[in-house]
Length: 300
Ligand SMILES: [Zn+2]
Image 1 (cartoon, rainbow, N blue to C red):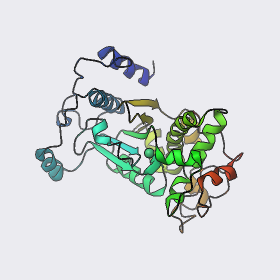
Image 2: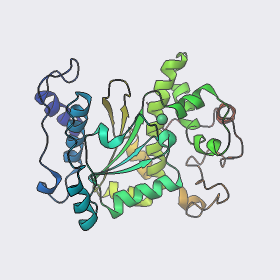
Image 3: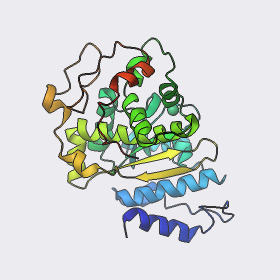
Image 4: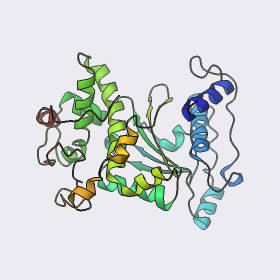
């Protein structure tokens, strides 16, 4: 039995109605952070997040760990978050609420479209290596405006094209794997592909994260938050993780991520692909240009 299957069986055993009907019984609250081991395992962290989301989605949030005492405690003793989470900046996705966690519990990196570019990866390295969180979660969400804009080929301006150029390859992957889908379903597939694309960018762009994963000190998972039902749908690890960990790192090919300093963007991961040209602005056009060049690695 995989860890995911094990955790699911534990959860569904605890809450038989959770996966279908709305469970009526109270969702357990694990022991306070201070009472647990200094460093929980990734499995323990996943369980805490699953239980926290169950409480949130069922209207049983505890709102623990957000009082003045916790502020004082974390100010004096420093932060010891249990998970690093990369999520979208969408105002409907308040990460601590979603998992019913308190101050100092989650090291959250937020950027529109939950993309993993240089600055995001640097922040993720701080959370996973320096703060030592055993779990890195990339959290997409339903009805993501950033992904939707790329799917629809919306015209975007200012610095936004530089942001959404990371999403284009995921949309292309979703299109190729799901021909004939209507736009609404394609957006859902693209949101999922974008989570895995982001994980791919991390695993191929950060030697630090890669080392932690190889040493089994870090687990990297994806998930989608449903902004209507409040439930998190867990996607597990990247299906191609072993191969991604074996491919050359981006910075090894192009001078430690300094290849494109004028744009602030790291070089692209796929060596079959030419270097990104962030000056082009319309995502829809970009998708056209990148057609037939994107590898099939970001599955789902
Ligand atoms: Zn979004």
